[in-house]
Length: 482
Length: 76
Image 1 (cartoon, each protein chain N blue to C red):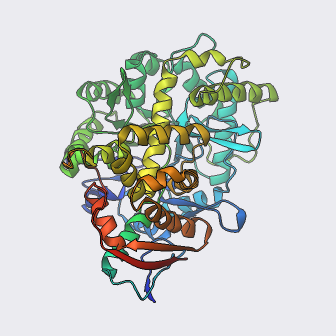
Image 2 (image 1 turned 60 degrees about the vertical axis):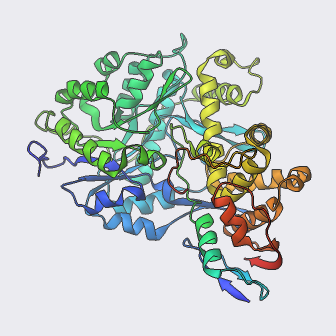
Image 3 (image 1 turned 180 degrees about the vertical axis):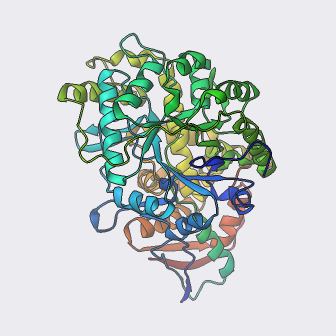
């Protein structure tokens, strides 16, 4: 074990947020990676059999994660703690199952919101968005934390969030908001230092000021990551190595984190090629150097894991205030009028444009993931501009869904109504029917018959190479998907 | 009728091919499995997901038919 990286009882050590692409590092054992943090929703699918949406977990992958020798943590990314609207899809049994299997010392979730109530149900925001940062927001978050703690029987920590919005005169400053939530909820803090650094770079509070205002003895976990620039902002994109200034900042704060038990590096799988597995290994070494700077582990602050009866703090006016904020922000991102909303001025915030772009990129990624050959056909057949215009029209008409299969099912229906597009691109109709058929089988358990006019493997080979199939021998075949 | 059942995730999706299919069944199985294997939710996060841009950079220029290789991420 590297010098200075020893962990006291209760301390977990240095680790990684789990993606299967990182398996070689987890397989190398606890001396390489001491902690595995799973985002359980990353192993879920959404299915709509019998007319009711359900989540289902990839149990095989979950069991594989459980077998890794590292300490486990659970970090939620689907039911954040800062919002007023619960997930309408039943999710607690799956979360409980993951918690029972992985036995984390605590659970964390984002201090954000990601859905709003709509006239016909619930509208997904398509991204983790900054919550109402006020006394009302503090009370709301504290109640959500108490509910999660009660439901899962584990201590809960919230993640200090990123916000691409400007500070507002009608809200608490970042430190006061985080402190308020931690103290009212009597919970832990997952200090995401890259988020705070993004916030400073993007015009919000200085990291030093936020840290000075936080109850640092409540910090159980620290996240570090890399980011990327976009339109003058620095994004929390989990896109590479931790920037050197952030390493220095982390080194300065580590001696103050008496309650710290885990230090985690985050990198998204699509960005892994940027630094490679070797690069992640070097990041772990660097984080072990930071780990050695923390003070001797003090007596952990006692926080409830499952209070007998949590007192609810938020009143109806708090919920109304938070809902109003949430609708203002989602409406602004979607380009809808916010004139009648008390927080409608958020529409003028330049950060809304960044959020709109990030929601869009996530939605486009879902379509590429679940309708890969269809999207390739569109780009090769229509070109970038016309494909982008088609996607813009789709995004304007339809709400997002964070699950790629559901988003793609919706887009497939949209595209099938555009006969002129299907006729314009060779083999697009058959390709779409095939991919959509696979989606519908897994989402709804319904069958599809696909008629091919050429060898589908030749069609897909061409698309794999990035161009439209040409000069294919006519050949009829039939595929039934069920 | 030949049957493919490449679905790695429960429940099973079954794919049947007609007898007149003379193409490579193994390739078809791999293609089907590739599509179905990419449906897991990577969840909402605060990142900037570049899958579409990656594909866009990879697709051939339709005028020159020249393959322009850009950043190719996992899965491509």
